[in-house]
Length: 378
Image (cartoon, rainbow, N blue to C red):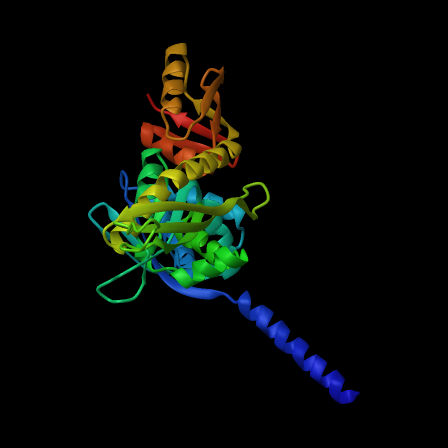
């Protein structure tokens, strides 16, 4: 009995240490840069440190797409970290700084909590950013064996159509962040592990994963009846897919749609017939994707209060309303008063604030998930 009790106690200790290991901090050296405006070194240092902190978070998670490609004002990123993932950077130490001309570079050692780092990165993901990974098995006569083509006709056509609609599309294949076997497991079992990893790495809230297989329906020269030989190879390409998105209300992932689709191709050789099958498949599959992603974006639109201080006349109010309406992904602007608006927007409020900042002489006075206050300089 004592031996059994001791064994159970040992297992509990192992489990406890394993759990603590998962939450263990990672201390990382990271750099951040900021422009020194009008000789204001303290403000530049604050922004450079914010950038360095975020760089440490991205290194911890292993992101492939950097938030800096979306956000210029990194003091706002600092606010998002505090509001949505408090305690992600447990501590930091400034190791040094260097200024050249009007640029300040700060190097820090930041100790980051990995689980909260994933939460912070997840909060920065774009609803309109779509990660695509659909490897295709194809014949290769030269090698005498089939091979997987991670970037193929289907993925290229789909990426092009999504880009034409204004979505930010990440082609996962060139990054080698995942492979075909991981996606095959995810599609067959419904496992979300690989999908979650992709969301963290590519700042995407929508993932399109799938896998195509081909089968020769009728071979060239095969007897198809009445003494007639098939003049071409007839190939059927079948796709198994899932479109997975983050539910921004619950934080959980949900399957927008899943299923199978197929296309057919006819050509002199099997390789060309398989390629024609992929083209045929893309014409059927692309409208399904566009419809589901558009529904997802529409379902995530929220109302954000935008107040612009310093607006004193109707002309300026209307001018600013037009500016807000022209920001990408703004679905509507309702005027509530002099310099006050309700903006319908499907993304993180941070991105709206950043877009407004880029439009003119605005200083962000206050920022929260559902409101932005700006000072307007004429």
